[in-house]
Image 1 (tube, rainbow, N blue to C red):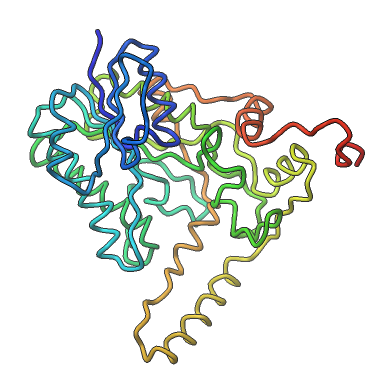
Image 2 (tube, rainbow, N blue to C red; image 1 turned 135 degrees about the horizontal axis):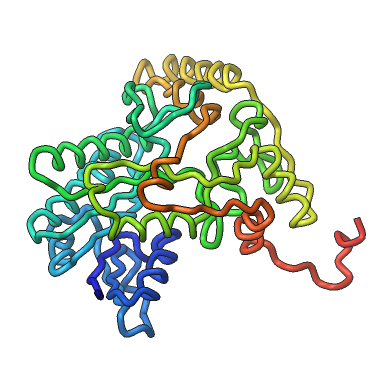
Length: 339
């Protein structure tokens, strides 16, 4: 049966891949984003609609008549928590309220692994829930976990048919060659890591995330559930940078940094600013740096069992999809081919 599917963030990284899967399955897709007004579609079942999730009236109009709604929007706040709360948490509620008002069958919200704490050594499952110390996290992670809480509260109190996904480090076409989760890029080829860079990271291909979202349309009885999404191929940060170097023939390198050293540096910067600005500065989210190291294994068996999700398990195929879309073939005679 053909459905009308609305995707907030449908013109973005994961959203465009999801749109393709939906169109292949015969559904009608409305891709909503701030930049959608600049896009046109040659497909008769794909429509682009310009709107922002921060505008409740436009959100309600966009959702009207939809069977399923995906919220993949990526709003960003400024330098204060209130801005992040308005852009991320309140916007998620705007979409949820519109879904309730129009009787949407299912709302599928894309959160992030930033909403959970991955700084320990014990395996993390969905039962562990969001980070229990949101105020000690950075604004992005805090906003995502507060959005999750708000949506699940609406599920319990008003029956919002919501399903939540937490993708890991998403790689592939439309993303970046060097994802920010691998560390701070100090120049084109050097990355300062979070931690040792020797433990497996919860990487996942954009196509695999889109497939998990697609499977959530018809999976029975999953309202109110949350799914962690990381693939079966989990390279370390150091290994991934080596793979980038080999694919590009450029001297990419990963420099390990102990988390305590990062935290010490941030504390020093904080105290300097505190003195100069006479206290008008926020305390750095030290717990965030521990979680950014992502030393805790992330369990994703629930999505595999419940959704029949099958992420890429072939190591070479994983790197092919993750890297090759960002790598231009070297021209004949390029000196890098001789190295």
